[in-house]
Every structure is written in structure tokens, then in C-alpha cells.
Length: 220
Image (cartoon, rainbow, N blue to C red; front, side, top):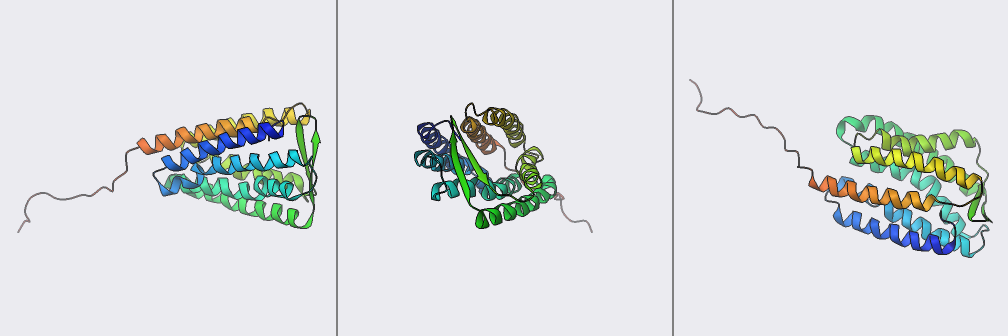
């Protein structure tokens, strides 16, 4: 979320462009979900520019924004981390994939049965949806998304998790004060971190299976 329709549109286009570069640079199929994350974040911000233009409300753009922000990201991030994680980390990340799936189901149900509305509050947009057991669902969302990054076993993704945690705290504080929305800055920084992560993965030597062979002829 940015502080105006124009800011969302410009930032969204820039983040999406970084996403294209990430996908192009990715050399491992297992890295593609995380490499494509900036594309999703960029599209998310572009959708929000339409919410600004409509002065909030409960139209299609508002619903699309909520669908990406809530159920889709709750699944996309942990699944993407699981795909990219080393084998030793996949079991623990798999638990968070399950948490994300349950959380996404709860969020999707809430969006299906309750209206979601947006209202402009100065330089921020506020989204309202009736969410049963809101604290539990939010906790599941944070554990699935940020938790999977922190437990990924991949240094670049762990750094991303730390930055997202710190950025989210700052952005949430500013948003609560209705001062200015700066989530787009977190999305931009996250996209750049992912770009460098993809490049770093490209330079990592491919692991070859160890083959043991005995030299010399057979013994009789």
C-alpha cells in the first residue's frame, strides 16, 4: 500500500519490473515461486491504485486487493519458501505450509461470505472485513509467511524475513496513526533482496551426487 493512486501505480510497475528480472534470472525451477513474488506484489499495488481511484468502497478492485493480500499470500509465501529451501529445512517449513493453507481457507471463507470495504483515511487506505477469530487468523498468517522465511535455511530468505518483520512493524505503526502508508517501500526493498538472492543462487555451484568407485582391477 502506498499513499496515493499515483504512488501505488508507479511503485507497482517498478516492483513488477524487478519481478520480471527475477524470473528471467532464475535458473532453478524450484526458485520460480519466490522469484515471481515481486510480480505478485507489483500487481497488488497496481490493483490498489484502482481502489484509490474509486475512493475506496467495496468494488471489484477492493475484493481483488483483499484476495491477494489475504488468502493468496498466506499460501504463496510458505509454498515458495518450501520449494526453494534445502532438504534439511523442508520438514519444518512444511508445517508452516499447512498453517498457511488453513489460514488461507479461513480468509477465503471470510471474503466469500462477508463484504470487504475500503475507505480513504488521509494518506492511507483502511480495509474492513468481518473476520471471525481475527487474532488467531492473523497469528497464523504471520507465522506462515514471516515464519517460513526465518526458518527457510536460506541466508537470503532469512535476511528477507528479518527486513519484512522490521518493515512491517514500522509500516503498521505509521498506518495506525493514519499518517502515511509505506507498505510499498517494504515491497520494493523485498523485491530487490529477492533479485540479489536469485542472482546469488545462480552463482552457487551445482551439487553433484557423490559416487564412490574402487580403482584397479578386481581381486581374485
